[in-house]
Length: 401
Image (cartoon, rainbow, N blue to C red; front, side):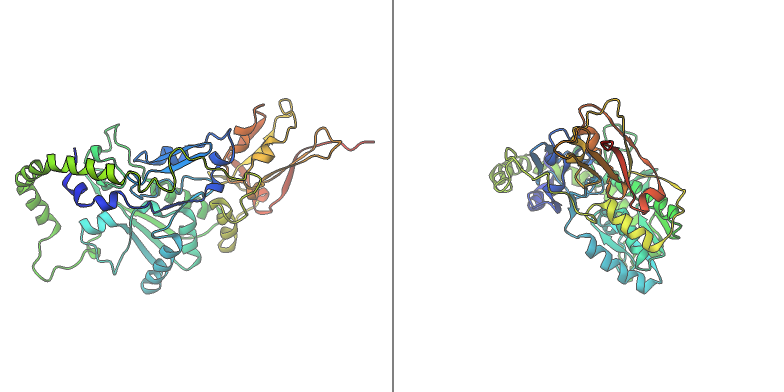
């Protein structure tokens, strides 16, 4: 059923996505053997279509929640409105005024609870925050960072957010197995805590499941409190229902008409059938992926013991099962970041395969491209191998005598 607010905000439904795509970084576009569907599986609206030679974000469905952004290992996706730099600049100003404290709140809760925007930084969704942003804020002097994500009846209000939940499921509790609301920021905070702890960096990260009273605007004009407004909403439920019913048919027809008329507008530049071609021989530069950005930043603000084992989604150690390997070098050619590098001279049979863990983003494309299944990936890696940017030789042809 079409909803009244859908009709009233139809312009927003057909607007351009605030998620930018750098196609040359997407491993599904780089290699026919890629099986990465992280962005697609993360999207709560099923707005992403991805396959070899094809990538599309459906603008009519995408709600710009940014769930997909932090899921991508090669940082092929990014937020552009606001982007990370804009968020950091505003957060730095808040921190300078509050002695190192920054509080983030999503636009839905800010509106619902009448949040004072002078005390809290409002962003479209808490999923706009990633690990690099958190660690970057620490480098800029932020000592305490809080994310406000209120709960109602033991369920996050995100499950009532049209950005994170499909319209048909809005208002249903988390226990309903049909409801998918990817709260990426919860995992981001946990991973950030792990990274900060590994590098012995002190920073207080807190997720608030309530809205502190001190953040709410003081009503000096006699306006109703949130509790009174809630009761008033309940009292007017019958009126709203009948109003909705009267607009229902017209709304359904209007939505269908508008959607059909503008369907060619946002497909004009990139049709779903268009083939996207990228040059896979051009590698992603160091410092462009989230993994490499973190590795460049963390040693600058903290220190890790070399004998520690790092186990996160950002890096991995690679080994070769030489009983299976035929030394074709496909893993090195497929690697998007040059973490794996294969060289073979004209008369060489085996060649040489090198692995630089500091360039690895744990995308797993090397294993997916290896038809011999000779690649062994381990998410655990020794700190000294990572921070020293040591090059390990996975195999090398013995010198001729």
